[in-house]
Image (cartoon, rainbow, N blue to C red; front, side, top):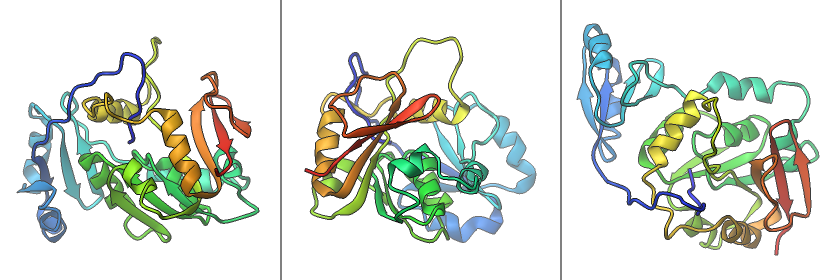
Length: 258
């Protein structure tokens, strides 16, 4: 998830630490292939529930026959990325606001998902026939997304800084930006996945990060046809977009290349 400056954003620095990766015996090869990014810790299947119920002081990962899952402090149940939601969105029979904002169904563009997060939008576009490059900076989020995207045709997942990627000279038909929305006061909590994503990325310092306007300008330089920005429905339009496609709670602001 790409962090942009918001008024009052926490400017704490990222604390680098080794991420524990619990794995069952059948996943040993996959687990040790990830040892450059995390610490593989074998666990017997009969001990797994006890381990999940134990007190956790920092985020970790679980690798079992179902794939990779997120383990968060204060939660006993692993969190898995919503593959069924992606499939359902891609099989509705008509293009949604996201697809239309990116130029579907008339085209099947190449897309840079520069703020991938848990990847729901980028993978939905891939399921609709787009070629998608997904960029995620946070190592734990990237590992989850990388595992989910295995075997999905037309998807490349990279760990890195979206500013550097957009400044490297490569070009895509569409640059898609879905920055983390600024927190707002409301009674209802967001979904569990968004809560976890916000908690994981809360320490990514925004003090020296790009503003949304700067990200849009970078995107306009490497987009061949358009830059699409996902915003809350009532968020201010800054800078002014060429056009918008609105849904029930979010809208997609579309900018033309510079």
